Image (cartoon, rainbow, N blue to C red; front, side, top):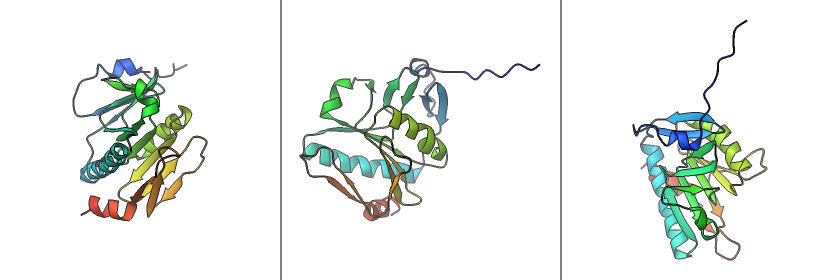
Amino acid sequence: MAMPALVPRYTAREIRDFPDDRLRYEVIRGELFVTPAPGLGHQRTVLELAALFRDYLERNALGEVLVAPFEVELTEDSAVQPDVLVILADRSSHLTRKRLMGAPSLAVEVISYTSKRTDRLQKRRLYQDEGVPEYWVVDPELRRVERWRPGDEVPEVLTERLVWRATPEVTALEIDLVTLFARVWR
């Protein structure tokens, strides 16, 4: 009788000791995920979104935006590095110099050929389970955004305009997706 293969399980603390070799190490429910450095379309998308969020958040004194690599530890066995994360003032007490302890106000993953499955399945489930109010999967190739909220079984798919409301009292951020992706693929 063959013994079942043991799959190593990791904690957030353990992956912090991995080498700095230009790979992104993340752990979701103890499972290790390693992704290589992203390409041009990915990086331009991250830059464009971060700039939009920075301007909006600063103009309205709501919080801050950070980009990967920056760790978000959601549980002892789950630490991820969203491409873009928004931390509103009500969650700023969970922010340390090294990581965010707990759910961000918004997590954004820009998919690339190596991350499609992880971003759409494992990370989505993790973000939904751990109370991230909104999670966006941005696909620069298809020029669309999938918006997920806790409890959603299917995403809202946006191709022209995306409206995000940080708080009910403040004017929403409106993103023209056609213009955004035109800038990415200039």
